[in-house]
Image (cartoon, rainbow over all chains, first blue to last red; front, side, top):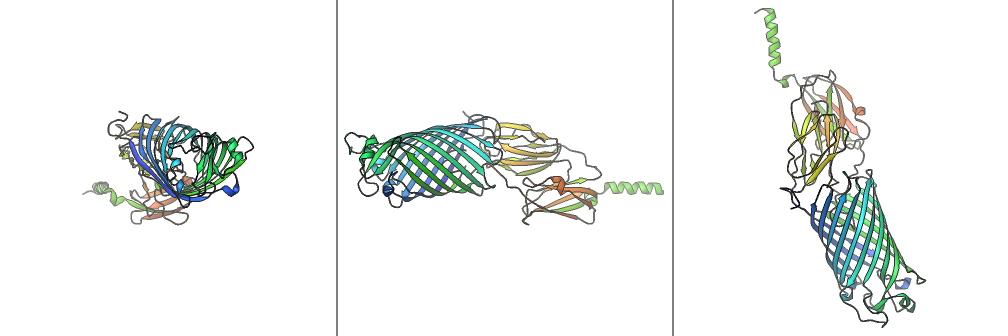
Length: 280
Length: 219
């Protein structure tokens, strides 16, 4: 029994709906191969939080997400998963430093069946608020995507699914209260691991890829390659409170991925406008 | 009846009159600098002669409802007690770092067995260690003559003994000091006095309750 008489777990739900635009969904290295599209995005996160002690709480949330792309419908998906998070504060008050350990698993069912699979994330985040207007956090996180179907090998020496990817993430985020209702957040993330890059058949990419398969998500027959890359992502988020429980959020992210060789790099711009609401 | 006895009876008759018969009224209007009425402002009247009625034991209440302190601002007289009942079906952890009253009610549900004594005038900022967005204030006044503005920015203080007063206002977001707001008024039975303030306000930087993008789960 975690709680004293009369108290129960804190049940709640967060909901978010918005529109996202990505100008390089294919992670293509060459400009002419880049594919851009817009998606309607819905995210739900609901669950229960148990305060185990004065400083530590445990949260279990069920996650649901939906991405509906306007043009490249193969990328549209529905996801269902769960998030387990243990969070502890070192002291009293909003400015006490905190540490959170989180693990998440989500199954995503895409229109393009070879993308179907599990997305796992696990990491540690430490954060602290400084004064009334500043907050900083740092995260170390591992992510892995494990698909449930393996496409037939296109190149005999590169078997397996190119959509099975993994990576280590190191991130920092600073948040500043512009006004009483406006937050500005700048986040930097460095991911080292594998990525999937789609382009017409390319011997040079194939030389550095460890997996490859035919890809028809973007219309014509192309090749999905799995390559190793380091990705730096800079994210700027503006969030404006609409009352106590709701917010409108505008996010811009720029990411650049570089292979550890002469293969080159690719970049992407992402813009996301969303409305979020909490029932907690 | 001798003149002496008549005077004594007259004095006794005055003492026997209900307090309201000797009471004065003070009306106040508090607005922001933009002219909009300002709720949750505390108006405090301090008699210049320093005479205050004796303190009686008072237990005030600040609830926790839907993960907020209710009321957001609670004025009390120094020497009063405050009970902090938790009306939510989860636990809260109420604390204050304020010099006027440092205290902590560690993780609890229901109503704590003992109320908290606030014996030092000043401003007490309340927080919950589980829900960082929860914010509330207790204004501990050195006088029993105070009131809190309603949604229309108005405060009505009644049953004040006639006399000279120093009247001031406080708001959680006001710029400047309370002392800069002091107005001197003379209260008389027949003529209610009126005071008015326009306050410049600071933004309130409160931890967010609404979710941020990419941060699912409990905050």
